[in-house]
Length: 223
Image (cartoon, rainbow, N blue to C red; front, side, top):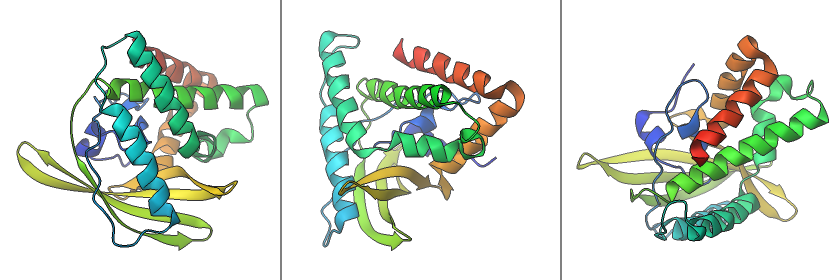
């Protein structure tokens, strides 16, 4: 199974925290607060949606609060609310669990989606406790069968050496706004990556085993 690069695991890609909380043994990575975004010459609706969401949550992540304090809880709740307006966790989860989604009961679908959302939000709480800056550059967007693909680059320094990571957001229109449901980095889609992980766990432990692993991981992140 292909995996994201080590650098990508170390970075909390805005609105997609789960590469750092993989279920198959990859350790959760400390997430950074995003640095300032560079201006774009011309922006379509997709770039504008990604930029607005990134800038809003990045500003929240840069706030310094004491771990496990009331202030951190309030800030985490605000980040969660912002995330839900942009990140379509339901669509992300359904696509990642495509091979098994239809066989799940309504109760199990609800449980799976709630756990997936909880993992994303718990990862952002961890992001409040780290401090790695990087610059987001917006390169443009392309329409593909009703989906907008927004291309960006993350510019950062690793061991005092510059590094660039190409990251594409996939967005779909929903009730007049554009919401992200997938991300592609190092040539691998997040949905594709999770589908492989989920299928591997389900093949050995069933859907209940997957839900149990997700629940334990969420508890670990929340500790």
